[in-house]
Image 1 (cartoon, helix red, strand yellow):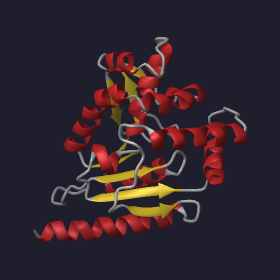
Image 2 (tube, rainbow, N blue to C red):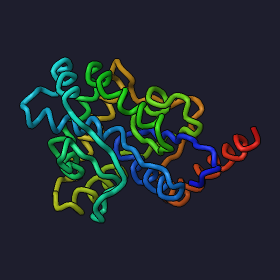
Image 3 (cartoon, rainbow, N blue to C red):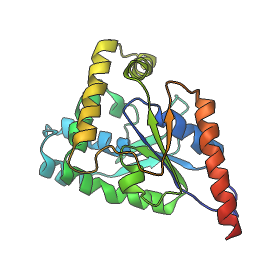
Length: 236
């Protein structure tokens, strides 16, 4: 991103395992933007709750815990395959938040209205301060409703389960595809049916089926939209 380029926000939403992080980090690298996974905030809170023996269904307790946490997302600090660095206070928990235990608890945590209310200002503030590619479940509808570019990703369950198993295997964690598929299906159900900020496609979003497209094809479609908007803003 150059000094004279108009700053835009790219919001990417979609189902669990649909490739949001892969596309988001790729676009951020291409554009020189900060890649932000809003789910990392909920994963950090889930990790902290598990460590503190706080129920993932206890909204008020989760909100109180969130108020005590110092969560920071920054560009990768270590060349170990990470897409960003997530700090919980002084501790690097980038990989800790990807554990199976956090996978199982993050959707119940994110379904708590009190927890969402506590973390939403942090996400909004980050998007307001920097040019970002932000991914999650409610970025285009709640976190960044005024984002210039909105994308919604879908993929079949089999493809998503295979991707997640490969991701876990690369980190030395072996989980069966059946278990992963069930976890993804459960997360889809919880994320889509929660009362507060459910997973919903923004009407103006570009819809991409990532089980039928390569990463390069996905990125090309989004970048075409980005360039069109940049050209429009430059003329204003």
